[in-house]
Structures are given as C-alpha cells and as structure tokens.
Length: 359
Ligand SMILES: *Cc1c(COP(=O)(O)O)cnc(C)c1O
Image (cartoon, rainbow, N blue to C red; front, top):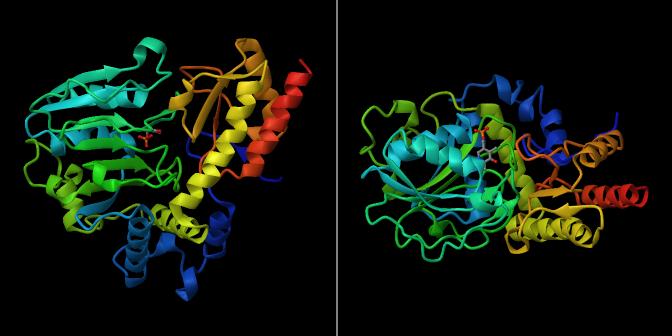
C-alpha cells in the first residue's frame, strides 16, 4: 500500500527521506555491525550521534552558549511538574491559559505553589490568543508560562507576552523547529518531539544556564532535576537513544533543505493553501481568529456534525487520514507539520473542493 497523507496531530508524519535513511541503517549503522537500537549509550559511536544531534539543533535554532540543551523523557506532560519543581523558587508562577495543554500545566503547577492564571481565552473556546502586552504579572513570579502553539485549537502566539522581566517558559511541542526563534527571549522552551521532530519518547528542553540550579523544591526526584541531566550531558541514565538518533536525522534533513527560514517559508506556503481555501469556501470554515492562526494545526468545521463525520470518513477512504478534530472539540483538524509536503495540502484542498461541489 502506498503511503497516505497523514494529518495526525501527533505522533505525526516524518520526512520520508529520514525514514528511508533509518531503514537503510537499521541492521548495520555505518559499518559498526549493529543497529543504533542495540548499541551502548556509553559507546563512542552513540556519543557521536548525541553530540551531533545537539550541535545540529544548536546550529538550527542559533542557541546561545549560555543555554543548555537537554534530551529528556516523560513526555511534555512530565515537564508540567518538572518546570515548577525546578523553577518555582518563590512558589509563585503566572500562567496564560490558551487551551488544554496550558490548563493542564497550570493545574499541575498548583501542586507545588501558587499558580496564577493571568490571562485566558477560555471565554471564546480558546479560539484566540489574549492580549499579553500588559498583564498583571506577579511581582514575585518565578516565571511566566505559555503554550506557544495550541495543538488542539490551532492558535499560536505570534507575539510573545510581555513578562515584565520574568523568565518566559514555553511549551513548543507543536511548533518546534517550524520557524526561526529568538531563544534569548525565553528562560526555557521545551517540547515533546512527536509532533514535529521525531518518534514519541523524547523531550527536548532548552534552558538558560542560570535557571539550572540545585535550589529545587524539596522532594524533587533526581530524574526530574534539570541539573542532573545538564551535568551528565543527557547521559545520566540510558537516554531514549534510538529516538534521539531519529531526531538527529531530522535535524540534518532540516539543515539540508536550508534551515528554519526555509522550513518557515514552506510552512507559510502550505498553510496559505489551506487557509485561503477555508476563507473562500461556502461549506468549510476555520475556527480561529485570523491573526492568531497556527501554521501547524488547522481546525475547521462545516457547521454540521454529521457532515463533518461524513467528510472525515470520505477523506480517509481517499488517503487523507487523521483529519478528525480532537475528541474534546470535534470537527476537523489538519496538522501540517514540517514533514507534510505541499502536495499533500494541495491534494487535500482539491478533495475538499470536490466534496463541497458534490454537496
Ligand atoms: C501533545 C502535546 C502535549 C502532550 O505531550 P505528551 O508528550 O503526550 O506528554 C503537551 N503540549 C502540547 C502543546 C502538545 O501538543
């Protein structure tokens, strides 16, 4: 069977070139006689894979020297606890609630201290990003927290909040490496890789060095301390070794195609094809305020649940899979991450036009 166009929100499509390379190296990685899956994480050859991956993401994102790159496990979800455990020195933090992932992080932080919701877009079903230019940031807040791209709702912070000097912590799971970023604007950014970078099981955290200290909340487990992993160069214990290797191949793919400016241009072009159609269609329409639209996750509806279900089914039969919206919001969602080719979006739009014509 041919490969389908996979619009899953995550785990998600990966570049075909990367999958082919991984397949060709599966049994015998570059003449060493074994798979990357089988080698010691302390071996020279694996350490080279890890070091190259770190160097490549540093180059791609232009990560300054005073930031550490950590390859972790536990999903983005584990960071909802690790962030307060490591950073909540005053036990106060401010959260901006733009969807379920931000809300979950905020709720988890309440286990550890005072987590204030300083802004929210819950009033309109998280269909926009609140104005964050002058929020009531707490004087003793240890950090301000955002979910930068809201995977479920399809909104994105195109302007970062004014944190009034407090470190910004951002969950970038679903927009990681989708466009150039200014890392210096963050105290920490992190994400699960299964949306835009690699297989589930790896979390990449990029943290300003001065925020990585021994002064963590009492009871913070060794494995959840950033310092543990920073001091050990992400080799404190067995890392998700094969997953990191695939992330490394994706970094190299990104470098080959021209880095983050090039992928941003591709992503803008792809998103425009879909959004332009949604804006002109009589049947389908987007659900998000225009200026806050995500380049990665595009939710849309017909306004009729039965018709939505019919569309999802017909699309699947035609090879466009995983278009069903998140189970909590319904409708449709096309996730068009880095590895989704332009052709996939063009063909989807052609299919949508045809579906509309037949209605
Ligand atoms: C998918 C997702 C998560 C959850 O990630 P897990 O790795 O399953 O814990 C958190 N935040 C965002 C923005 C996501 O897209």
